[in-house]
Image (cartoon, rainbow, N blue to C red):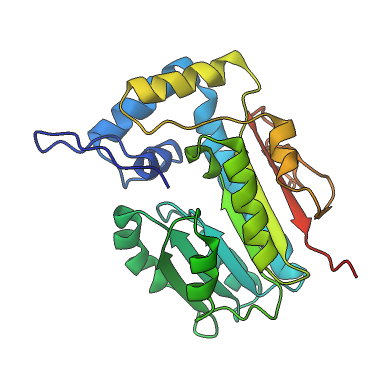
Amino acid sequence: MPARHPAGHGVPAPHAARMWNYWMGGRDNYASDRAAGDAVAGVYPGIVAMAKQSRRFLIRTVRHAARAGVRQFLDIGTGLPTAQNTHQIAQGVAPESRVVYVDNDDLVLAHARALMAATSPEGRTAFLQADYHDPVRIFAEAARVLDFSEPVAVMFMGVLGYEADHGAVRSIVRRTMAAAPSGSLLVLWDGTATCEAVVRGGRRLVEAGGAPYHLRTPEQLADYFTGLEMLDPGLVPLPRWRPDEGDADEPVDAYGAVARKIFRG
């Protein structure tokens, strides 16, 4: 959910969603996105593995939630659609699953129209243009599709670093989960400042014209799960969250976890 930057002279500025699409091997990007993406990869080659492992993490966590009986998914800060999106994974397990994608970006909204056309006949897929700083509005509008008397998987997939303030992010996550019913899941991953190269990559991103992204420590990410019941194996590097047979255990500077909101009487 980054701010957009005008490029001038009719040339689109590097855009976070398109750059991520490029790193994942997609085709919805421009030369400016590829140039900025290559500039980041030049100092931090691990960004490509991070992008691809983030999709593997999404696939495994959504599949787990659906197999565990969750039939509702609120994907906040979804970015551009690519292969194996949330609704495709969830409805592949349970065709009746309902998915609401949330993003504040006009570009993502334009691509979302095609995304919503591919939903299963039994399920429902919708897109909400909103900002994750406003969970009250998100839940009010998502209630047109989702039944918040039943559990929902709330997803923040590599997007919270667009907010610079750690305390503000913690508030966003806690207010969002406070609105979710008991039994809901928090599915979250983010980039971590766990090596000097990834920090240099963040600086190069800004130098190349991209929106700044604020890396956290694993301890800061763990703070977002306070008060929730963490599922095994806890907060771990993305490739180590319940890998499928054949998944590569390559090092990435990104951690993720799934946790359940439980009723405390």
